[in-house]
Amino acid sequence: MSEEILNIKNLTVDFGGVRAVNNVSIALQPGEFVGLIGPNGAGKTTILNLITNAIKPTSGEINFKGQSILGKSPDRICQLGISRTFQNIRLFPQMTAYENVELGFHSEPHYSLAEAFIRTPHARKIEIDTRKKAMELLEIVNLKEHSHARASSLPYGLQRRLEMARAMATSPELLLLDEPAAGMNDDECNDLVQLIRQIHTSMKYTIIMIEHHMNVVMDLCRDSRIYVLNLGSLLAVGSPTEIQNNPDVIRAYLGERKQHD
Image (cartoon, one colour):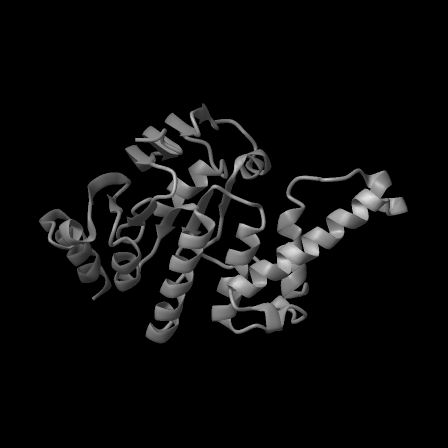
């Protein structure tokens, strides 16, 4: 078996007197697609924030491709090959769909300010290559015909797709998807499943996906594993069938439903 691309060991984070993540360990092989689920407040998004160093852990380890990424800046983590989407869409609303994706390619500078100012052949070639790659990503997420539309003018489901394209523009090896199907109806979820499966197959990303739509999780993770968090702790790990039939998982979700009733 190849070396793990991501290895999280005994990760813990405290916010004041609240333990948001408690001694969680997660490991992924290159190319895996792993689901991360749990009731509201279970600590799922906190895990992604810890991986990208949006917040700092109290204790534990996070290793990416065999090296610790603890303490590295979010932009450096992005350059190393980790990208993400957000539960709440974070596009630049007044920029076009193309411009939003193009920004992703500039996460790491490829030419100097002086080269950009005098438009050297090297800078012009990179600009041409960037435009080609940005349009290719927009085509992958079925947004090519909307390339000149402002992000704010796109329907909600297309904004979700645009955010995925922008995350892909950084050329990640590990892609973190935070509730990509949030706010979508059943038909939109079905279309999204097909798109994410296509991206995973063609781009060979390793993917961690947080999602509350259980049909989406079970479908996309059918050949892999699902991690279940509850109250910050790892409750269960297993195949979709094992997770669906796990009594501890059922109780955790039933407890959430009772709170909402």
